[in-house]
Image (tube, rainbow, N blue to C red; front, side, top):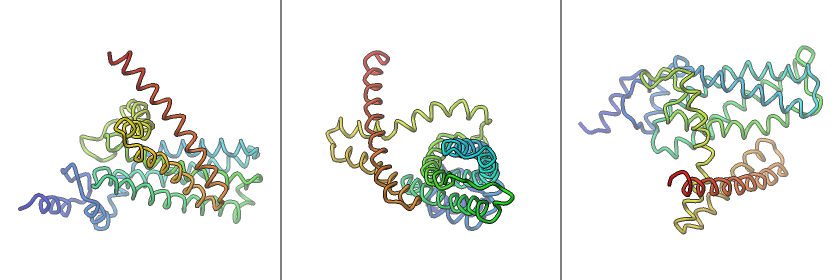
Length: 276
């Protein structure tokens, strides 16, 4: 029996992807398992992602609403609603992301997670906050200075980065739930997150610098350009304004340029003084 057949058989026999021992699982097998055993998403509801996601998103909404000079009652209404529905959706999203952590090819799994989860979460987010402001404003105070629209547009970018980061840390064995021996305590996960954040935010700059050192200038320019275009397109489409697209793209390129220079300087210092 071939290895592929063994993998297929083990996945077919497992009610949960975390019961599969193989380190790599094809994208097709992941979808097949989720379709045949959808209840595993609920059983493996990721309370770690739910807790972190709810707190971070509620804090984000609080910041945007207060920056938009909304009243305290409006701000706290938005925060409570965001906290409640994010706790549920972030747990489901975390469970789905975990399902793809061993999926191959990795780039395709990353693409699927990056596109599908923001669409899922922001569809619910839009419906929730829109309904609150248009149908239940007599009970739940609605925004007065368009804070909801501002928060929603920026929140899309936050969701994409959040999905990417969750997939990244789960591939490193962090924020896992129901993964047997791989599952660590929440406290242990939190201790590893700072270093993983550093690794995550330096990935693209290091990739650009690596291409430049190898003389692959076009590849470096391609990565740099794709970053700004992706960010600008996402915010432009979800916000529905062309001005958001090009201004965000320019901002993303400026941030990436400065951050790449900072990383390059840090790498140089490390090689000269720390490594030696």
